[in-house]
Length: 238
Image (cartoon, rainbow, N blue to C red; front, side, top):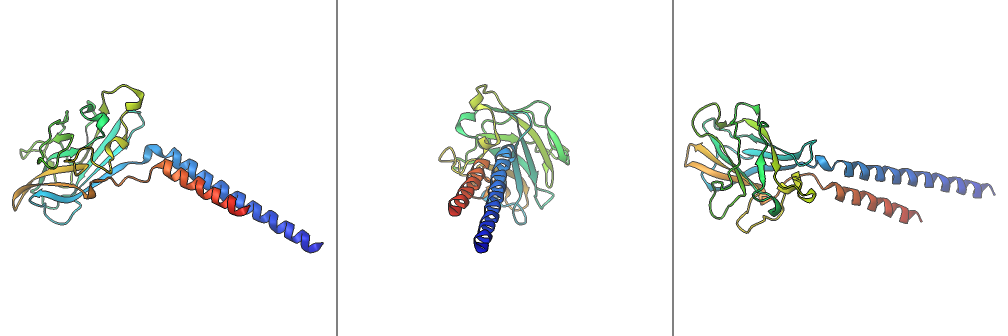
């Protein structure tokens, strides 16, 4: 009798532990789902695919697309890590999903200098400078004259991007700038830049490694993983 009571108590303790584990996993999945707006899409521009290579070792630039608190607005932050002070960015390029092609623009009055003085630039270039085999949907042209407005080494800026599409299904989102597979055959990179002032060769183009973003895993995927693990625990318990 005493052994039976002891086994029953042990069984109850095991059930409580299982419930705690299940609750923790579900809570993690819910928190992950709630973090959807924080799954920023980032690109490290570390591949020299055309022309001269910037000085030093990559990464030479970083670009991040992140949703803001206002639906339909995406904050683009671009930082240079060029190691030769004579080098500067002539143009920054990026791609979007097909649905947003030709519809994205810079929101007026949102240009912000974070490090140094850059621009401001008020409109996007819809025919960005690029070689035929490395096309992009959009470009941001920077002044090339040696003035304070030039995008020089180690400087950083941010700007808000919006879309003129009004349908609820077409609201601009950071995920519109993330693509594992380029939307066209000649779009081998998702983000890139035209670098000028390079000591040897004069100029060159750089792009993100592998043509894909480095955003965090999708919250939906994290949720499914969490719930799946919880389900396995329950099945094993039975």
